Length: 609
Image 1 (tube, one colour):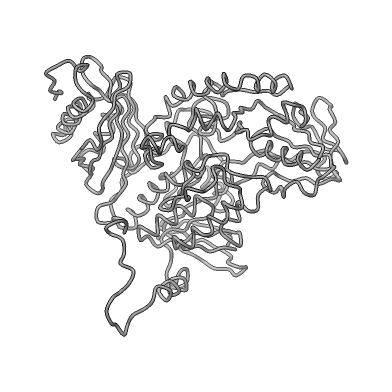
Image 2: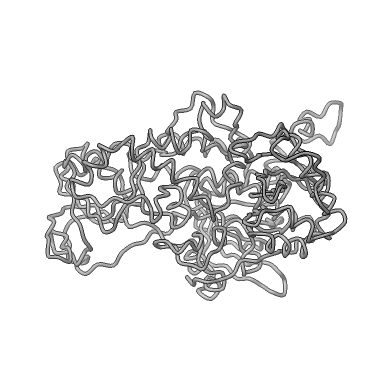
């Protein structure tokens, strides 16, 4: 099976090149000729699948990886109807084409990048995603519910009566099929999608109100990512929403979202234990709702407790004798009570800088303790060079919607994503060279990531080691916030002492020491055995700092099946909560609907909790 080409590839239009490739590729698939289909991929190539072929989130590389995937999945997936959905484009010899297709159970869309190799177009990157299950389409657009029931009926019930009855039955006479632990942006986004898909579900959270996860953080917290990057499913922020929303505004939005999207949500509810029954294929989850013990028996359990949810609370000698106040950054109340106080903030990432800046603004005496090198990028530079082509008004004007941007970003395989990031951060380094010079002159240890790829790769690989500067880094560069280097040895009654003997007088110590792996929640709630069975969450296995190998190709255990039946992890920033909640919700819906969901390329476990 070969492409039919009557002229050199270089003489054909992007539309012709894409049409020829898809026609030939689909013919090979229809004939179940795996070798011919794999030959449509470049020698060095990447196929990322978001549940369409694999019921998994997984990437294979090169022709042998493509062949192995197709050998396992082709007959049951039965992909057909590959159609280019908008005019392809060409840049530097690479043809980029959006496409749609169908499988035996659903409908998908994707993005392919073609480039010439041996006189033929071959796929360099190939993204396939499932966005809809046949027979289980969401009630949107032309399928939206009528709402009003015209006519006369003695059995009529109102919307409020139906909602009240549903709320009263949930967890009592009706068990949720999916129980989502954690009602931040991740749990709420997933709850909204499950609601639209008709999956009986319940989101529970320990706080009194939705959005308290944001309201209860330190006073100066605001989103460092721009509004176009942060939309939730179905309901976008209005076009007068601020680019960087303050935490309390975000909290209010989340609370309103729960109400508008009718997300089944229990506040003031804590899960105390969970056990899995292999025989019954369900969980027994003990909870306390408003202090009252209850038992829930979901088939699926989702930990949406946040990748920044379990604080790393260091144990330091002398904490018991320190006479001042000390707390983790997640419990920092804000700067108001510390005017004139000597404040030591241990850490040099996002929270550390934000807290240092707010304390300085309230006339505190502030010292930052930097324990390891940190990457800093100016917010405006990041918006221009890092996000502007995908998430901005400029992008919208160019036809790049948030949904389209999500797929473009998803189409870049993690193996080569750093190659796309490095040039952007080189531009930022050039633009802000004076700032970096002053920062390093102040003694700050700065880096651009192990390979110069900057913030996004640090986030994906390790979830730490960076700060988006909205002003506080200037305080360090100017010496307004003092800087100390080294590890903490111990605390005395009134000071933090570093390993080199440096004493930092303190009335307040803030441990801005980050967060642990999400499966720490599984250890606490279920067992250490299950946490170890699953392995750590997050990271790519890049062999860079704090991201040990082997190479995974995807973020470990996130939004996909784990080694523990019925256990899922959902977390990340607002962008990931929005985008990946779709694929997690579809996986859960398929299981609820009784569809066959054989998982290809299952998650391996390399790192224990």
